[in-house]
Image (cartoon, rainbow, N blue to C red; front, side):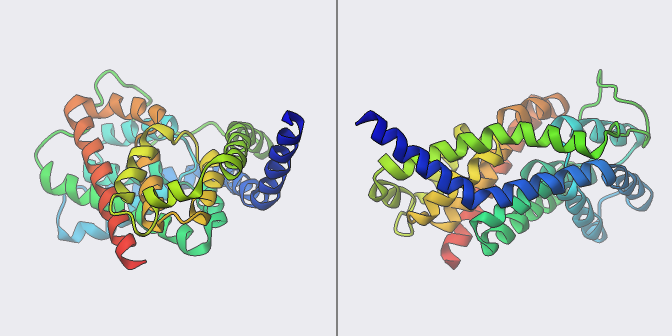
Length: 301
């Protein structure tokens, strides 16, 4: 009996692997390519922002959008983003331009975006739009409410001066190997959890909690995303199974916004530059934004 169950689980994992491997593998390739060949360009573009805009006004919206797009295009992890933020901040780049880069970089990156197509093209594009919108809103919020206040703290944090920061250039194959190994573990874990969900979890329960008829689906998805989101490589398969079981797309987007925004290693990095008070503001902004966007998408669907 036990062997029969293990065999069924193995077959389910194999099926999930065949469904998702293409999206995950090519997402890793894209991430490695951008890390190797485009990281310097992204840093240069951020440096250029300093010369074009350094005081918030209504005309700054376009530059905030650019900063958010650059954040979404950045493949580096949060501990790679923080040195860029500190370096540019010490040079004098305004917080309302650094914050949208930081927020959108937390929520999405090129390999996660490509992997998200496993959930379907509409949801992948919605995830990208939501991540960019979060960055833009965070930039505008910073410009309006922190015009004369200090938001980011650089004291005691030294990663180099000006725009000279560069992530060390590794060979493409090394970057590919690094991303492959880091995300591969979570990818396999996600496939396993998906197989267990498919085999043992009553879909009626999930439908009642996260389905279209659930008035609390978005809030429940946020509550689940905060403790459970570890890596996008492990989240996509299980989220796909939930969607197939009837999960509301708005709840799925809320999960994908709240999860990375509150991922533990991201929070540890953010705490370094935000301080306690601004860190709490960041959490409230992120969770509120996830809830609003999730509810809007739920209404549309």
